[in-house]
Amino acid sequence: MEYILLILLFVSIELLYFKIAEACHIIDKPNTRSSHTAVTLRGGGIIFPIATFIAFFMGYVSWPLTAAVVLVGVVSFIDDMRPLPQLPRFLAHLIAVGLVFFELNLFYQPLWILPILLVLMIGWVNAFNFMDGINGITVLYAMAALLSFSFLPIHSAHLPLLLTMGLACIAFGIFNVRNKAKTFAGDVGSISMALFLGYFMIKTIFVTGQVGYILFFSVYGIDAVVTIVSRLMKKENIFQPHRSHLYQYLANEMGHYQIVVAFIYAVLQLVINGLVVYMDARGQLSLSFVLIILAVLTLLYILIRSFVHRKMILRKS
Image 1 (cartoon, helix red, strand yellow):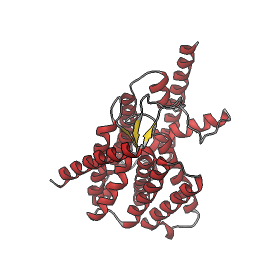
Image 2: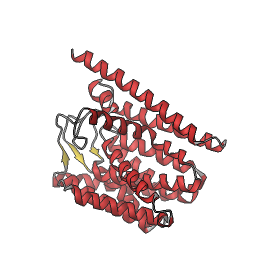
Image 3: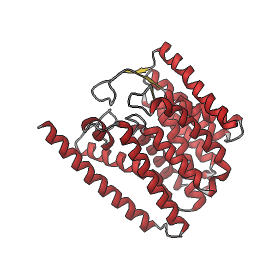
């Protein structure tokens, strides 16, 4: 009954936000780099930091993680309404990651580990945000990650929190997982969710001692990294909006339904996650296995991307 009330609450909050967003003109107008063709409400992902805040009062989550998610959520929401300079956004991310480290007692780890984790965490948050480009992809990928973390026994105490965030995803997905979305997550949604998932990734690796769980984010990671490298080779500004991710090629240039592409990304990640859990249960989740999987996935991604890019060129010629 408690979770039924929660999902009803989250849907109600979304509907209330839509009224506010319409009144305040918080919208996303399509441009030449957009994957949408109609004016759409921005910031529906505000439900994610709100869900974290509610979970805190229900006793499901600690104050440092709540503060971290809400902090990046507030700053990102302001940025959604009126673009902010990079400095305040970076400082917010830095403080939020520091709160995550505090929650995970990472300041007691060897000092050389912290800069590496800091770079990886901020890189992950930005990569997750960059990948938020078509309907459904952010929320479906997030649900795949939440489901995967929920399956691990080490997170049994966090099941109410993971389920609460999953219900928030469902509430948002009702209005986003459509051919014509009612709302987009905005930075407030993608960045707060990325930080939330990053917390569980770090916790999983440190508790299990298995770096192989990094594969839980491999589909997004490979797409983001290969795309960045490709753009750098073309001497493009990687911080400028673009449409050169594989999912954008598939949805925009090739004309595949955005929801289908989003589901493919989420399902593929679920399959990989299932393999990771299976190999760990058999005691075979070795570093060599992880590197082989990453190499194979990266090669397949590059081949598919090249094939799709060639088809795009042929279509234009």
